[in-house]
Image (cartoon, rainbow, N blue to C red; front, side, top):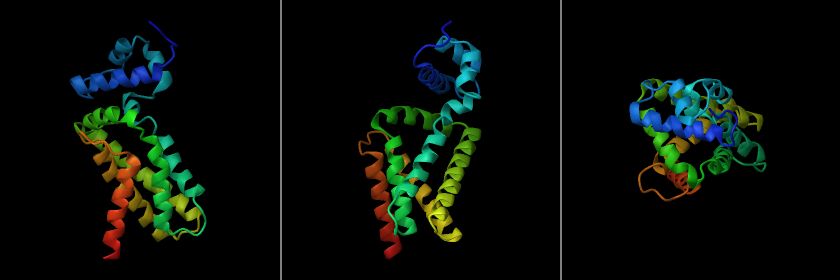
Length: 188
């Protein structure tokens, strides 16, 4: 079996997603993933702590993008404008070539209550990190929490639209559209 080939992480992710889609998340073992990817189980564990992490790999990168968006934004912006800057920065994470993988990933998550719970925890962690970043920019605790929660809601709604069958708009375009809708709601 191959051990250290280029693209091993991506191959493990692709094989995992295929197996989860075919048989369901709980029915698949790490041994089966490793065998189909033609690596050892030990190699699997060099890349992922467990099979759930295959689906949630990249969470830290996404959180970092949101936080960096707040940190890089110009001075003098409102909390909602800072949240919009975070969303805009994070949109780069969702390149069009990730869309089909994201669709399949979401399908696996939607079919497993424990994975749904993990997804909600991921979103809560994102909101908490974004709230802290906003507070570091001088936004009050309450306003930072509200702006962070709104940004995560915009992200979630945009993501669902982004992975919808036939959707062609970029994540950035979708997020901006949802933000405009939010702004229209708050000004009416």
